[in-house]
Image 1 (tube, helix red, strand yellow):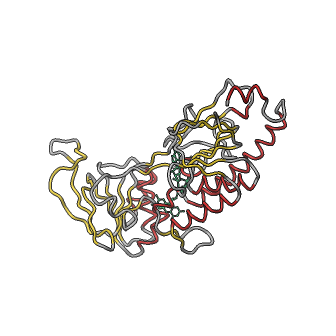
Image 2: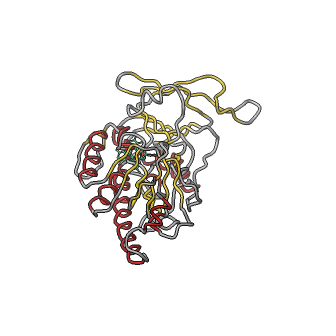
Image 3: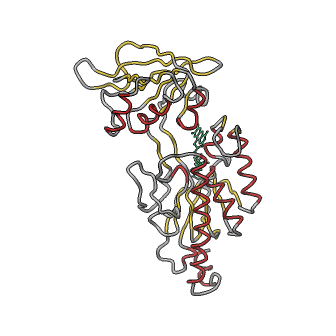
Amino acid sequence: MARVYDPVIGGGGPAGLTAALYAGRAKLSAVLLERGLPGGQLLNTKDVEDYPGFEHVGGFELATLMTQHAQKFGCEIRTETVTRIWRDVGVEDPWWRWVVETESGEVYRAPTVILAAGGTAHKLGVPGEVEYAGRGVSYCAVCDGAFFEGERIAVVGGGDAACEEADFLTRYATKVYLIHRRGEFRAQKVIQERVLRNAKIEVLWDTVVKRIEGDERGVTELVLQGTRLPGGGYDFEGVGPLRRLAVTGVFVFIGFQPNTHLLAEHVEHDAGGYLVTDWRMQTSLPGLYAVGDVRSQLVRQITTAVGDATTAAIAVERYLTELRERRPVAGVSQPLREKYS
Ligand SMILES: Cc1cc2nc3c(=O)[nH]c(=O)nc-3n(C[C@H](O)[C@H](O)[C@H](O)COP(=O)(O)OP(=O)(O)OC[C@H]3O[C@@H](n4cnc5c(N)ncnc54)[C@H](O)[C@@H]3O)c2cc1C
């Protein structure tokens, strides 16, 4: 039997929890489906220093506060892994149109879905990366740059993000080594030029990180290796002698995978796979909203995630009001309930 809600919210990070709060406060019948503990990337963040109102707050503490706040306004939070989101175009009543399926076999139907499933930063996959995550290894310059004031750090990558963030990080670090496995960047020309002009950045071309080492305080050194083969071409596993680089931090920007694979149908997205929305956070499919890290936008922060979700929840409430007015029958007719339950 399908469970029916006004919005189904997929993902319980800052974006999903904020959507839940606003949906609950607007008296919508909302459910938030989260595969793990609610909080999203906050649960991987030791210190947050840029969330307004909190000079400093632990990620876990902020996640707990956001979860309690959403629950206070009545949103149901269920531990469920969403496996598929699709649009039942054959259904006559839009209230039953969106279908969300989960790993446990549950089926949810709703006129709207707010996708807040975030994404995953690509990892280097080298020894030390997991051990020193949050203790020198970072995937977010805006979030963690300020912790490296006056230090020597490294950035890994060769695209727009790596080059832009290396440049940004020179506000804090005295020296930034930009480690790239090829002999040329993939970044846009204008960004490359900014990097090459910046006297605080030293580019280590044709180089990969083999290991991240440290002590009880965090990262102290990277072990590097070349990638150029003597006869031409590359071996990205590394060739030739290992060398050491003393740094206290390493920022990894080698790609980010937004969690859009749950969508069964094509939805407009940008070159990076992030979902494109209008100003209401609605995607190219009516009734499907995208918020937070899964959405195409300039920066991905807690504040932007909660901002997106606020807009989406209020837009959903207005969309449902319009839908209700256009609906031929008040409530859900018995034949439909029997057909889709
Ligand atoms: C290490 C680190 C430190 C950071 N530090 C800061 C900081 O200091 N300040 C700042 O502003 N930003 C920081 N950020 C960025 C910030 O955390 C993100 O921008 C923000 O969490 C995005 O929120 P979100 O809700 O869109 O996505 P997420 O936080 O990624 O939440 C997505 C949620 O969806 C769930 N989900 C995914 N797939 C499914 C599925 N199939 N079914 C059910 N649930 C699913 C996930 O479990 C997760 O809980 C940091 C990020 C990282 C990685």
